[in-house]
Length: 99
Image (cartoon, rainbow, N blue to C red; front, side, top):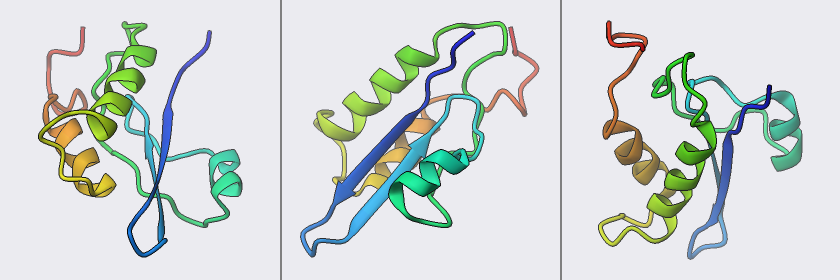
């Protein structure tokens, strides 16, 4: 099967490039992503928000992109907004509600 994940790259007012990787399983970005952004490390969420029994990863990616680009209460800082987005969900690695 296919699994979707999201990479958002923000350029701040000073021209600094800020990449952020979001995977609904909370895993680190693959080497292809690191090579694409020419970085050894890209900040990413570590919270698992999607059950292994679910197939909604694409919807999580779309809602993440909406949240960091259009949501009226976003801060404008990609790292803060990524934290805020994932805080809306339970961490399924710590929850017994995995189904």
